[in-house]
Image 1: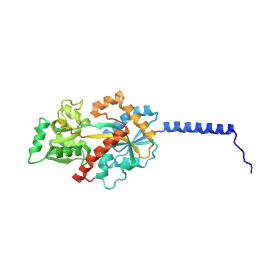
Image 2 (image 1 turned 90 degrees about the vertical axis):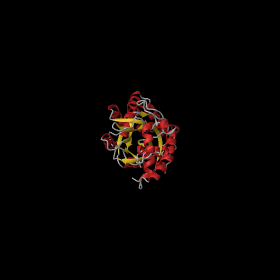
Image 3 (image 1 turned 180 degrees about the vertical axis):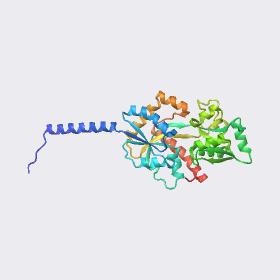
Image 4 (image 1 turned 90 degrees about the horizontal axis):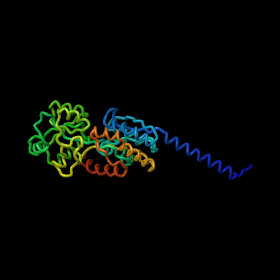
Amino acid sequence: MVTSNPTRRNVLMGGLALGALGIMSSRAAANDVIRWIVGYPPGGATDLIARLLSAPMSQKLGQTIIVDNRPGAGSSIGATALAHARPDGLTVGAADNGTLIINPVAYKNLQYDPDKDFRPVGAYADVNILLAVSKAQPYKTVKDFIDKAKNTAEPISFASPGVGSPLHLAMERLAREAGLKLEHVSYRGMAPALNDVLAGIVPAIVIDYATAREVIRSGDVKPLATFSASRLAALPEVPTFGEEAIPGFSAGAWQGMIVPHDTPDEVVNRLSDAIGFALQNESVQARYAELGLGIPVSDPQTFMKRWQDDKAILQPLIRELGISL
């Protein structure tokens, strides 16, 4: 048996070859397509926002991003797919209050655990919501509505796009903290809820501004108050519930990006930087203003704190209401 000893030149050439291979692998990874799982159908708000952000994020990352819609079970189908994806940064997911906070309590046989399966990348949208009534209702101001809801013998009905939705839970919080007598009427989506309010079947609705803006402009519904911490730039004359009912009160929905739990820090930070870059894009900001969306702080730590803070508020409320989906 003959054993050959590697020369210095052989070792050097081998090292260069391995280095070149590493560079090519890195470039290949950088050029790989990123799949952005959205747990809702095409055309909805979550899908719209993901597609809006994907172009400037692709520019920043130097990678193509494709949106992969996996609707069903309140985003649980999409979240389950993400939980089983490789933690390499090539599969990311859209998440909201429902995905991370509501579903783990409301669904009995959830196939993912948000705390164990995911890590946050960054929040990218505050979905501002408001209370509105049809034009036929007698309430001229939110104070009129609050006074009636406090003193009425029969609770005032309000519509929402679904039991256990962030909009439904915002109204339940308001009712408890302000001492209001309200009755929830649940619908399968915002469109049928709004239709019944316009028809006078239900007097009030909790609704996101993006959906409500056209019927507000037409005068078919009147916005009484927003759940945001401050007044919306699109509705400067409409007060907040923090101003009119409970000092400091705010509630709403948010959206952000999550990845499989074992995704490396450097990948998470790279994706987070891309979200921040996209949120500074002038076209994105103009579209956000048009839709009444807020631009949150987008780093992983801030997103994690918001997730956990809202979890501490909403999960006990869901259990108290006995919500099961």
